[in-house]
Image 1 (spheres, helix red, strand yellow):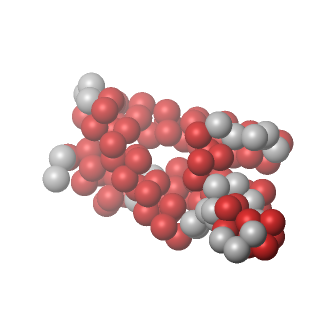
Image 2: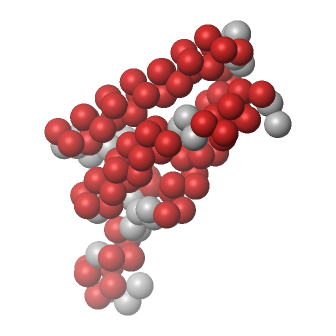
Length: 110
């Protein structure tokens, strides 16, 4: 395990980041968004924008903290780590597939 990952785990340094991401996923659920919608969101609520801004600020803060203690990080390694942790949250907060929840779709024998 890389030292900076061990640091994150031991100090739970990504707890706030994951909490914000969890809240974002809950907002996506509330809006009825699908994973496909996340590729090109149909609209942005004020709450989603606020959480997105907080998420980015926290991601940058953690990156700066890691750089302070461990020197230059490989950005792709850091982003891979963050994406892996986000995928864990995704499993806890699945988004719906509108296709299967759409009454017209179901009424057409699908």
